[in-house]
Length: 243
Image (cartoon, rainbow, N blue to C red; front, top):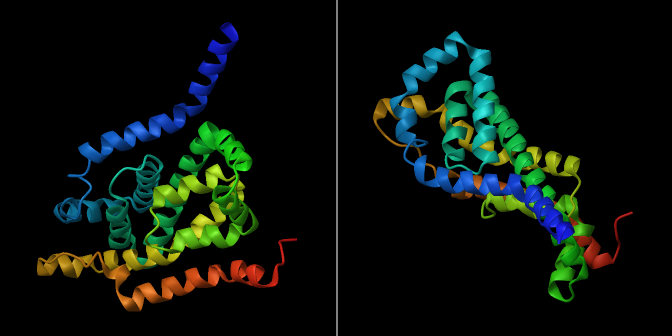
């Protein structure tokens, strides 16, 4: 009985980081959704610019840290944060800071999920038959392609794209590299929108947040996603496997 109790307690402790993330995410979804908005950015733009001009390095570090928290705890406001990065630092620096913060935050979720659930879920998927086993085998054989694909396709939720690799034993370094590089296109798009917010504020308008779905933006990104799947298609046609 004591051993069962210790095993249960050990399992709970392993899941605790992921439980904390889910609880904070649920609370944040209700308490922060009215604060992390475009209106908040517009109303505080002068104070943000003044602080940036006086403390650029601190502002950059604070921005990255805030982005890590937003992504790491799956809080609302990642899009607004990316716009803010572009507004404060310009398209290139804003995108770099956003991608850095998002990658670090995604890594937090990845490690929490792997530590808490990854091993057991992987064992179940390995032992499963039929479709589930085929899907896992396909992902195992084409990790790079699939990792870039789920990052590049806008329809894949960011939180889901962080969990799937954790459950499929993707190496941490591969997850970090594919996340950092894979989210650059989308980050550049929204950072460029943020960089133009000054003029938007002056006109009393709101930015076009659906710009990423416009053909001249979406098609190149989908093109990159298609390119990422070429190795999968090639191996399916030729029957070759990774060396």
